[in-house]
Length: 341
Image (cartoon, rainbow, N blue to C red; front, side, top):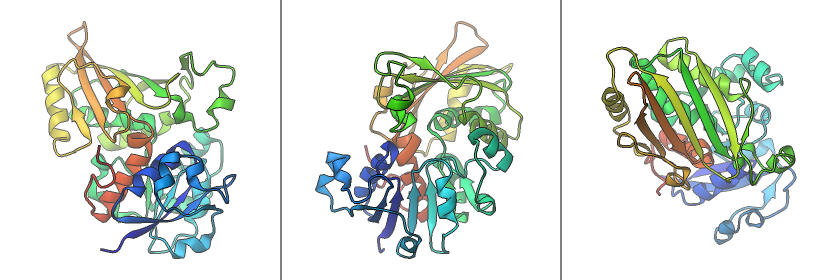
């Protein structure tokens, strides 16, 4: 099979660089174009020394003509910019967006949470929100793939099957998530210059973090129920990784063993989702530089409650790795291609 030609827009951001590194090792793709704005004319290895060993094109400004030469366009751009590119897609193009442009099905929700007008409304119905282990082959019916946010990835993977099977109270969910500062992008140092970024832990976005919208949408859609949850994210003084601690109440007649069993059955054929033994204490070190999502179900001091730990690398499973995994699913490549530990 001929290699798929790839264009990466936003190649020098934290996620763009991670995506580029993964695709360099992928046997089924050829990176034809790297695009940026402030980085035009530079070599990408000036941003990431690990890329020096690969023959990669210099960074250029995006041109719509590039779409005639490529099969796949990855967009790791600020919110709103992939919408403009989507208007130039031809029938041979697959767009995989790592930002939020096609995550929300309702334009009013998008404008409410992102404070900008959606410029490609007719493309929303052509897109799919895709956690690979949940969307499966359905992805192949859509020319636009929207990769979930990093926090939602860590939250939706454990919660969807448990709510769907009616094992937990879907009205009292509490989600406490902590992320490395790379999740805020390259501008994090300016944005949080007064927060003592490297030595403090900061709660932010209480009740109004943008990822509330996609967690709500996907929980409701995938379970057929109206769910309630509290979600509080925190910025930590580490570069990468997410650990979400999720507090849930068990429905009557259920216990921790049932929870573990349902998760094991749901994800038994999924290489990158690993269900740990009961009461395994997780850390972000367990998942750094992998495409894995580790889930641990822990006992509470109350019999009718449990605590779920979910850990991912925000730049891989919550970013570039998930995008590559979606591409693999779309084309029927080996699920692990380019993502081996």
